[in-house]
Length: 72
Image (cartoon, rainbow, N blue to C red; front, side, top):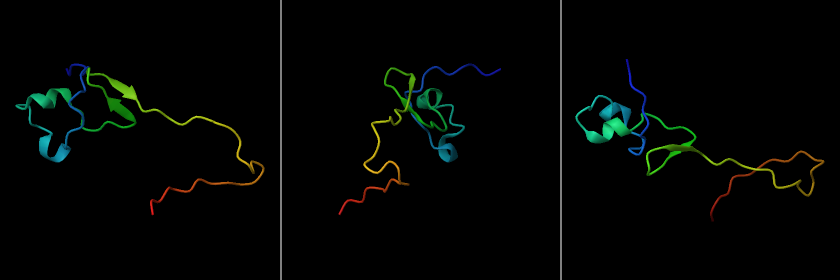
């Protein structure tokens, strides 16, 4: 039976090269994939901050969309 993992401060590991490297200490404190979360230095994981509603747009009665920011 697998034991629960409560330490994620190893971050993500490359599954192709590190998947079965039990001899490396960082393997026991790592994940194959961390999605929508941030590993903390103390070992835990915190949910990624999301967005929040600020207010209506100038033309909120019309259809609007978000455009990606392009530098220069």
